[in-house]
Image (cartoon, rainbow, N blue to C red; front, side, top):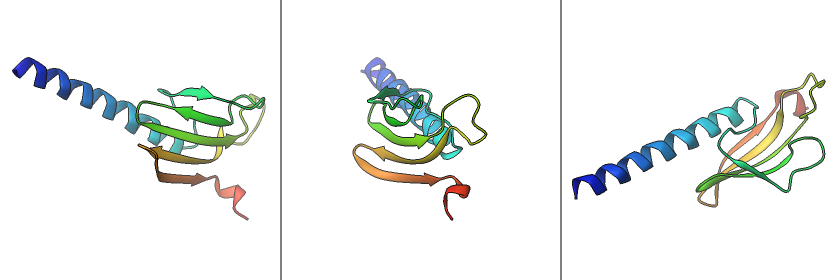
Length: 93
């Protein structure tokens, strides 16, 4: 029984670390590390990113020669509920 609890606890801790890392990256205008891109645009990265239990919808300028950050706006979802919005300051005008 202790092994089962330990395995579940480790899985929850690993998932938490992945989710927090991705949310912090998006909050700092970067693409998430532990998510898979789904239906991405031709600009190199705008679209939906799905993780385990969380996802992001991101818009940005993902071309290497752009001066803007990767993510210019995004929304973060945790178990289907929106929990975060980010907008690059120069986009608000």
